[in-house]
Length: 304
Image (tube, rainbow, N blue to C red; front, side):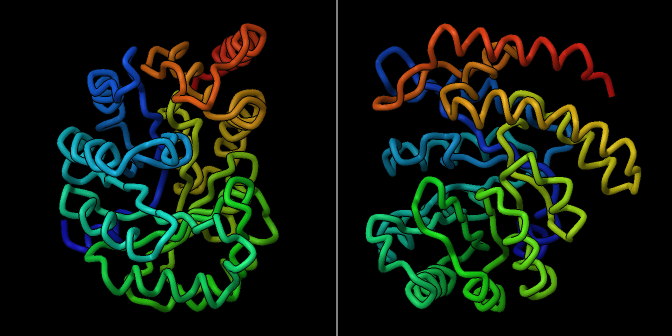
C-alpha cells in the first residue's frame, strides 16, 4: 500500500489487539489468528499489534515482528496494520520500526520513551521523533500514554512534529479532553489524532479527531464501528446513544481492571483472550464476575 493510500485510510476505529499466550508462555498464534479473522471485513480501519493492550513491554522484538506478519497475512489489503515499535533508545526504535515495515506494518506506533522520564522534555522528544520519522519508510504515529510512561508530551512539541511530512498523527490515551482539544487547534491540517479513551471519544471526534484506538473494539468491534459510522454520517442522536452503551464497558472493564480484564471480556464475548504474561496477574474471581455482569448488562441493550 502506498503512503498516500495509508494516509487516506488512517481514520476510524482500530482495536489495540491483545496477545494471547499458550500454556508454555509463548504466543498462541492460533488464538491470535482466530481473533483476526473475526475483525476483518467488518468496517474497522485496521488493527494494532504490540500496543499497551497487547502487553508490548513484555514482548520480545521477535514476537512483535511475528504478530505484525500474522496481522498483515490475515487482514484485507485495504485494512491497515499498525505496529507498536517504540523502544527506549532512538537507535533501537528506528531498527524495529524499519523491520516492522518490512514485515508488513503500514504505520509504526511509537510510544514515548519513559525510563529517563525527567529528561524527556519537549526538545528531547522532538529530536527523538524527528529522527525516527526521518529514518523509517512508513508513516509514524506518536503514542502518548502518560499514565504508563510518566511522560507527557507538550502540546507545542506535538504541533512542531505535526509539520514533519512522515509524522502522520498521534494516539493519545491520557483521557485529558482539554489537552486533546489544544493539540487539535495547534497541529497542521490532516495530522490525524486518535483517542485512546472511550469516555471522551465522542467529544474528541467533534473537535476534529480522526478516530479511536480503543480496547472496547477488541470485544465489541461492531458496536464501535456503528458508533463511528453514525458520527461520520452526521446521525448525532444515534452516535450519542451508541457511545452511551460503550462508556460503561470502558469504566467497568478496562479502566477498573486493566489489560487482564480486557482479555477476560474477550473470552466472555467469544474471542480468545487468555491470561496475561507475568508479572501481570489474572484478575480475581470477584473481578471476573463484575466483568461478566457488565457484559451481560450491555448485551441487554447492544442492538443497533
